[in-house]
Image 1 (spheres, rainbow, N blue to C red):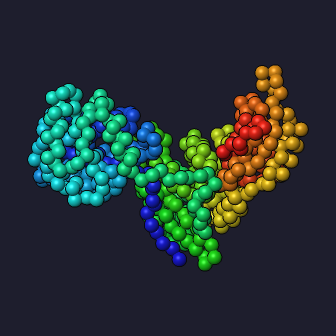
Image 2 (cartoon, one colour):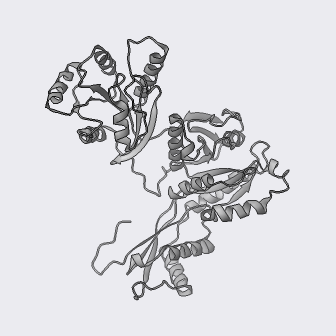
Image 3 (tube, helix red, strand yellow):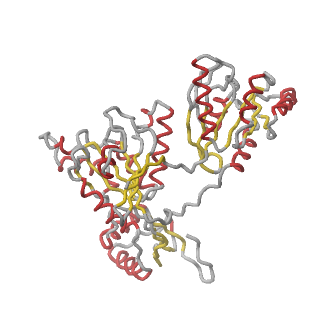
Amino acid sequence: MTTQTPSVDKVPVIALVGRPNVGKSTLFNRLVGERKAIVHDTPGVTRDRHYAMTDRFERELILIDTGGLEPERNTDLFRSMREQALAAIEEADVIIFVVDVRAGVTPMDSEVARLLRTTNTPVLLACNKVEGFEQENGALDFYSLGLPELFALSSEHGNGVGELMDRVIELVPMAPDKPVDDLEQTDELRIAVVGRPNIGKSTLVNRMIGKDRHIVADQPGTTMDSIDSVWSDGEKTWRFVDTAGIRRKSKISRDFEGFAVSQAIRSVERCHITLLMIDGEEGITEQDARLARVVIDRGRCLVILVNKWDKVREDPDRNVKVVEDEFDRLMPHTKWAPVLYISALTGKGCHRILENVERIYEQFNKRLSTSECNRFLELAVTNHSVPQRYNRPVRLNYMTQVRVRPPTFVIFSNTPDGVEENYKRYLQNRLREQYGFEGTPLRLQIKRKRRPGEEHEEV
């Protein structure tokens, strides 16, 4: 049985709306912290929705800059801009209605306000271009629009923006608690499929679920949002998340594609396993290495799929040894991840994917007892002691596993900052040699040894 639903992103969406040339893009750039939207005095410069993610205001937010919302205009351009703005309103958790205090209350402002009063979404009225006492008094006139929450600000200079965003944070849904070891206790196993555009992600998902549920085309960028497909054999359930192709940042020229990238990264966070697809014909790129780092940093399991292997076998200059050398050179941080050589188009090697996913999921949930941890630590230190720090010995006193998903260990030491990254890698490698942990990242934290009478540290 298969069903398909759009992906759900828990990051709140904040939409900036208003008629053209009131300073929406300037405010958007101010909130994002960099110049992302085009700013110009000509009305209608922003025609489409511009998306950006920011974490500058206590939690992550998705900001949408829209074209001018002018209900009375009948040209095709302004109709399109109005449609884009209305779509943003539908998406939003909070709407910021931007007006120009210097222009005063216009009939268009009144019409937009009338439209916004019909929505159940919170609306904050941002009176922009307030840069003096006269403009502050003029801002009071906008209470006539019938919107109770008014903020006087200057997008260009930043005055009053902080107060506006404080209120936004109060209105948005609370940030979800996401402990590292709690990926929503569920019977289904969630698998994200990521990679550069035109790599065969949708083709692979179609093959895994047994039906052509996704659009497959040779043109890069067909999948612009993350799509969930659920498949069950009656005993187990797998959820495959087909994500948009992720390009290098300098190649992301369209704003909606930039938003698709953020959606893909969020999809990795809500899945247990990530299948990173690599083009076997083209070889490993720096972008592939960066994507692997994204998965590792977010503590998710990793399986690497070298796709299009049916075509590679026709090339005498490319073989498994050549690809392995590329991995050693460009992706040494993924040595613990299994690599499968497949063809999503013909199905070659695809039968091994779920076998590896199931095995790695067990490693993702593996927990060692405290006694096992301390036996391991004693032997590891005996074989290779910790280098001295400031001519003083660094002692590792105690080790325990505090979480799974991914396996996370805490070691207590008399000098935590004396344990360098090289030694942490040594311990991680020894853990893998002794206990497996194939396909899953490991987290290793070094904390100060507790003194007698101290409470246990929260970890």
